[in-house]
Image 1 (cartoon, rainbow, N blue to C red):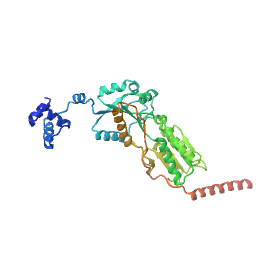
Image 2 (tube, rainbow, N blue to C red; image 1 turned 30 degrees about the vertical axis):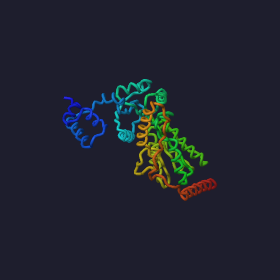
Image 3 (cartoon, helix red, strand yellow; image 1 turned 90 degrees about the horizontal axis):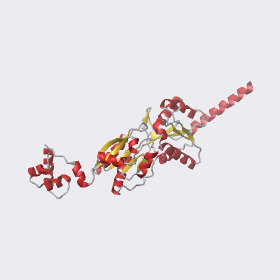
Image 4 (cartoon, rainbow, N blue to C red; image 1 turned 45 degrees about the vertical axis):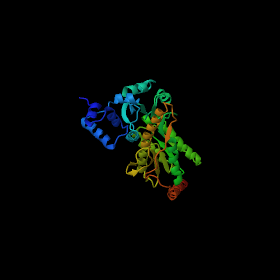
Length: 359
């Protein structure tokens, strides 16, 4: 049998209106009175009629997190969801998950339809992969309150500052004294078409140009099983780089493994810093700029609430800086070691010339 407000009111000897106000957290009542009503509601098993409450209040106090299920979709990091949940909790809001295909999202009326079907006040849309042009236009122009995670739309999106990360990672190596700095990107599959790849590379190029140094770029779409072998060419000439910036740990890991297989020590002989990704691999704490996952989750909620409060007006997209650099795979270059290698190279050339003369 469904418990009513009148049943609680009868038990605690208060009016139905007083009980309703206490349960909703309004009105002026003594703390002991509030506790008595809330305790009785728990004892009787009373549950708020959310539909009726939403009709009275004009909102559902619920936000939907849309997860796409397309083949090019990249899984959403759990810590972004953690950031979303924490910010919603601070604002007294609930979260539900909504799975949708591109066919659904590409419909200009889909947002309103999802809102009515799932009873949500707004949507956070996870677009962690390649964004179709139609969906990009909806992200930029839709009037329904929504915020978009990790799109490069000029409005209503929250994403990391990928270009800034590429620049900061390169400057970190420059400040250590490195001058022969390469950039490695082995992206394949969904990540290859994501806007973050060219932006990180652009940040590297800007830093190298500002330092008056030539760029050394290795950028190929390589499957995982091909990366180890293909990266060997980075170590095949005397003017090889002393340090590398990599686009994620999927490039840093095979790069370090290949270097070690050729006799290089990290970071003594070679420094490697990656943008995002894990910090530990192959027994080495890889130097990296951590992806700002919690901050992105939190800010996506703040943007959505801002859109709701401003009657769905579009808001400028927000760039979130990457975290502080950490890890142990970077060190200053060793001029003495490079000098010894150059001397050995010269001696080898002299011996070759001598042999030719003797012949």
